[in-house]
Image (cartoon, rainbow, N blue to C red; front, side, top):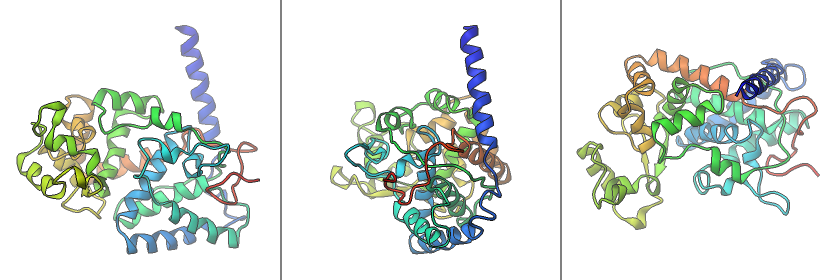
Length: 323
């Protein structure tokens, strides 16, 4: 046990040293136009389709949770790569790759071979949140891109909409994130949508009961059934926050308090007494508290095991490893 404890401390220290190699001014000389380029592309994409803001935020989260923020999620299938895009938590649901491609293309025209796809993903997520009315934070740079992907790790590590509070806390703790970090990051669902296939069982056959999840507010069940009337509508979408679906605010937490959490993994944050419920109550009462903790948690998540220095590469095409 003592040996394990010391190993854990060593790994934590190495992770901190790696994160400290990232810098807010990393591209000040080599690509000073990066932030404005990203803002322009993300702004156009979100104006065209407001849902894209949540998609870019989720893209960052699903990348960082699998072996760190290394753009491994962007890699397509090849003879030597099994893409993480095909993992169950990502398949036909993670999107926004074209926006990242667009930013990368424009950046390459000005700063060829300089800016990593991993840094672009991190910056795009920040811009998406800010454009939706959410908080800002300092994005640090210097990440490099992975030369491999891990579908198995994606299937294993990414949170599931079936997870209970204990399981969610454990998943985030394994990444060095606290229960409060987890609840704050879950608040990103304030601008998210979900396909019917991911919550349909809660409406029609919860735990094999043949009826809806009893914890769901019944008026909410009726509303959701109108949006998701049958098995043939599994790709239909519903907003996590139908009140302000395109606005980044704290309404998501208020909805949890009245049993209108779209996923089980949303509702358990409030229905389970303890740290997660306390955080939901705090964020419901104070948007400022939510914004601060969300921004802090995004910085922590962006520091998860980045490749720096001579590790990895700067991909010319975010979807492919360099030849």
